[in-house]
Length: 321
Image (cartoon, rainbow, N blue to C red; front, side):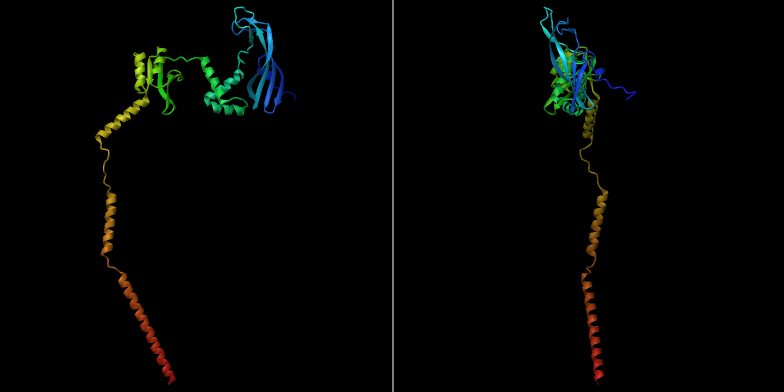
């Protein structure tokens, strides 16, 4: 089609890894690549070497394309290290910024998976990756996050920190978290909440001058023992909590627990009910009067019938005469 340019996939990969062949199998793209390096630095001594030892095929995952899993098959080279003082004789080439040593994913693919794991959870991120077209598991994501944390090292904190406890499993296992006030990020997670691990951590971070904590005595004792000159600040939540408890105790000491309040409305209703019952008792019973009236009605009816029968008989006799 005129005026349209085809997308060149090779632009998204390093120049020294040209694409040789692309194959499509179901929901997977297999991209075959071949290294064009001629000189590689030894990862131990740092000297550049040119003598090749052999070749091998390295299989790694890359970012998916249109929901399809992308597998790279890279033909890489091994090199000899000719430095006599270097204990490593043979080493493999690496692709800095694109693929690290011993990795099964490219750097950009690892960054995506690790970010998903940190923002959601290991198992949740694994399910998302499966939908996207990345093959991984929850355990692999946890390992990637831990390796990244070890490479980054312990984060530095400023002069002001916050200390609090949290539960891995409520009522069974507790830990202590230390947060930096300036960045708002956690800088350490310590086992237990008895203050012993906090003492060790404070001993390595003597630059701390202000510490925000809860009202736990273990933390106060640990801070006082290691950095007595540091200012200890009670956090707002526990101050409000302690204030409300003090107010409740003061109210209890003055006002009794139970106060009887007369309900006049209930008393009026009960009085009305009593008056109605009394009136019903004083009224005469009407059942006998009704029976008497009914009997009178029956007597009157019978007399009328007898009278009519008499008149009928009299008329019959007259007709006979």
